[in-house]
Length: 232
Image 1 (cartoon, one colour):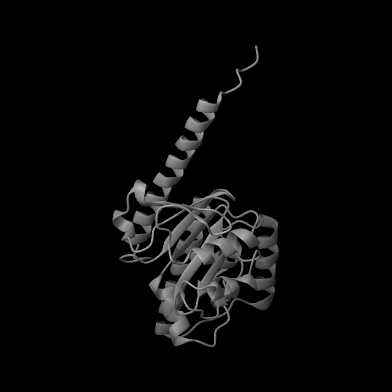
Image 2 (cartoon, one colour; image 1 turned 60 degrees about the vertical axis):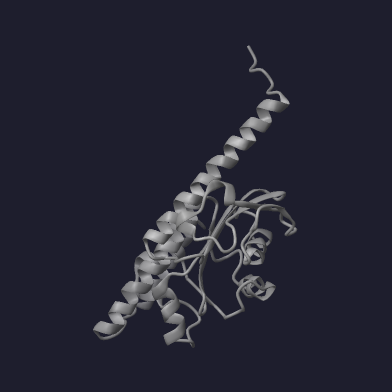
């Protein structure tokens, strides 16, 4: 016997249930980010593409650790506000969604050690992760995107040169942004950025960085290509 075709009310109920699940996940991740000191106060923003016409995004000016489901805003891929008061940095999220067809979830946070690298070493083009095999295997390279004023289209444009190749990026003097095919992937990327940044900073304090041998770096990047595109 065939399953009954769902009626319009059932479809609406399913859509609302799915939206509530994602909203709940957004709140949980915001609290994890706050607890890990990856964002403070009203900093940071998260978004999730339900469809090109329905993108859930955190609100502007709200402390993420105490945000409620009702405060999650909705926009579309064109930037129109459907409901709520979306993040002032939504243009960055939209640029990622436009350039990365596989992107479903975007997390922007302010990992302290990662930001500190861009202040202390403004000449760096990427995190010096050729010292750490786990970073190469899990994320490949982690570029440092040149500074652009927060909340502007220029910030989204600055990311363009690295998309869709890179899913974990540090933003000079501002923070980091990770995108993934779900929130788990994007969150892993953000943790990876700060954890690696902290290890590298401690190594500098203890005497300096030492690179892996070139042939080992090449072998690790080859293995990374076999593992696929996702952040691990």
